[in-house]
Length: 605
Image (tube, rainbow, N blue to C red; front, side, top):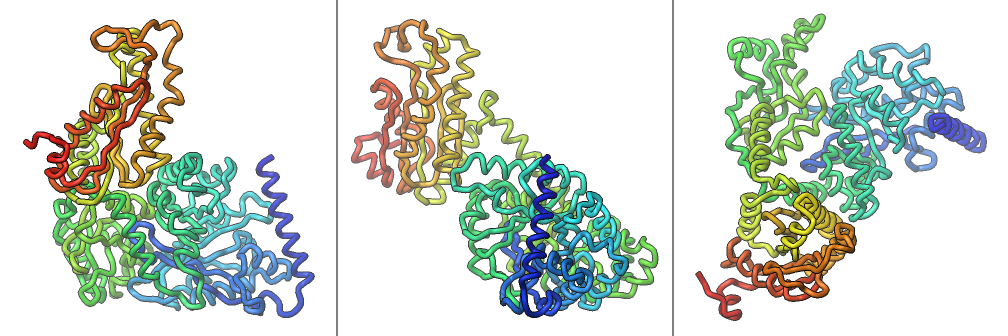
């Protein structure tokens, strides 16, 4: 029923488009065709990745929805001619060069059934414009003719010519996901219906996380469309969506434009914030790079590969700057094709190199690089990464070295993780506190301790006690996701003690929300016949029950403080909170340590 409804809806859209054609006066669709270019930007480093060619109605002076454009053309009986004209205009307007970006070109899938279509017609136009097939991504966006095999036929037709394929407008339904998995396009463009609607939208985040995980599993690159506000980039970057398009990133223009520097800076700033303090120096993984000018003949590169069999790939330079990468495997694939050597042997390496390699500065955290590298197209996943220092090549990083580092780090983190909650343990906690203190920026730290947990363990048994520990962990994490999702850290010190570290804001309110989150469900772990609650000495405590005591430290000034001093003073605050019945919170705003200690009468060690 879902698929039938979708088809009926598509047919109604086509009928509506045809009715508009009947009402329209003036030029035909073919006479009105123009092109606008919408920038597609990398959400890893803010650089320009490509452009989407958008049909533009010259008569109405407005952008043309591609499905409407093709529907009008088909209603006029000019689908083939108008599609040809649009492709020619779009390809002709894209700048060529050694760092040519990708062109996402809308194509009606049903055009493959036109008898006038023959393989190689688009290839010829691309080569005449100085581009290569891998520079062009065909954006298939319809199957409105009702034939379920239309997309299959279009994909077969264009993939045999070396084009990459993208799907547009993935719907949030089972049928659309099954089609994506079945057809396996190289790219899938998702709209705002996949985005979280607000900064605190757990359901929206889960939906985005699910499609991102499915895309990774199927080796499909996601492209987010409809980015109109800066805050939309955060969840997309968190879940590894590689590229974006929308008015915030750049408005469609008559000629292709570069990305606004303020947009690039903002994306890089957000990426640095996400990986601030991440472990691992890229220099430790960097190997020396062999470089060649972009004008070097392919045969010379091939001879060098034969002599230096251990080299995985070479960096290609132009004017001393890296503009491409050629991996040994890709070279062999190219030359092994029919007529490969005669076609490319004497041509410059710039004709077959990857003109969009992954290039990072040596200051990039390894964790950030691993996420960026894994968001690449499937055929680039194992390509080496070019590392630069002040724009000059300083070396390359192999994916093998990168994966080994990630594996080692995960094993190290697992060693310190609490086996009951899975949260980071004492060593990661110490590193995180030290990082925050070293940065010198304001932050807040919250220490949480369960009250009467020993009594609960004795009364109900350690199995149910473990359940309470897990519930406390989940409550703290849920509150962090809801009220302080950015750059937060939740750790398990041990036993019934937890720690939460987050950016400075309104820490008292966040602490109160954590108590509320805890109180919402803790009563479900208690029976009515449990008898009196007793303290550690066995003395009954009237009116007491399982509760949570919080000590919140607002570190406005970090000078003089250490992780140990923070822990010592938080113990005093927790002790004060525990003197009150029920869940309670004590907080303090910290200043420079020695002045604070003198004012509080603390012993300075």
